[in-house]
Amino acid sequence: MTWIRSLTLLVLVSGITAAKTLAQDELVEPAPAEASDVPTVTLTDKWSILVNPAKPRPGIIEFTEKSPIQNVDEFTFVGPMVGHPFGLGDFAEDGRWATVQGAAQPVEGKSALMHLEAADQFELEGIIHQEKLGGWLMLIGWNQGHGYSLSNVTLKDSGSPWFLCEYRGGEAIVPTNNEVKQFEWKGDQPFRMTVKEQQLSVTVGKTAILEDCPLENYTAGDVFLGTYDTRYGPRPVTVRSLRIRALGEQPEKPEKSSKKPAKAKPEKPANKPGNPLGQ
Image 1 (spheres, rainbow, N blue to C red):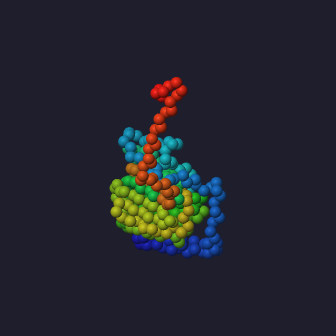
Image 2: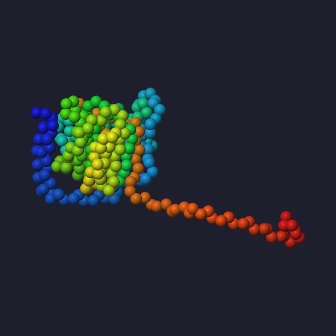
């Protein structure tokens, strides 16, 4: 039996169990997070550079406190394919990212996650290199365990499926886990992700992974990028450049008048008493 059939069976069985649990809870919406728990979004419509192509330097250059991207410690969640050798399941962050040869990449561990930015509606783009086999993921709108994952695993014989899934309380809502594309990322590729009006679009090179996919329960939250362990290990990912900006209506700037204001003529200085020439 191929891994695809095993995966389908696993998802169906897990989906039935999850559906019963959700039915018992009557799909009650989670209580809104406290104001102090909501990620602070400072992103504007101006591009914010996350990874800037740098001149290669020898060795491993660690991120600093002032780096726009940061490693994440003790981060866990339960993905939709627990126990599957290739799908995203129990995730426990155990690695770190750093700058190597001018680009960001994992340098330790198998499940390495880095924080990119807190965002609401946003556009993210850059150049990312991927090769070999294994899994990687992104989390968007992540707020107190609620959000969405976009995960991808590249296999020896069964292609490279992409999955989109929603989470609540740090656990995947299994029935929402859907395969959205079969596409293998090879080498350096331009990458673009947008969330606009609660719709997700993702493009790799000239291939659309998702186009205006509705995210019904999306809210502002954190954006992460990382790798996850599989039977083949994590997929090697190298971020050569990356930038992000907010999307949406921005305050309109006042229009400049095309007419130039008339220049005032300088007045003649009045003659001072006893000085008929005004000098």
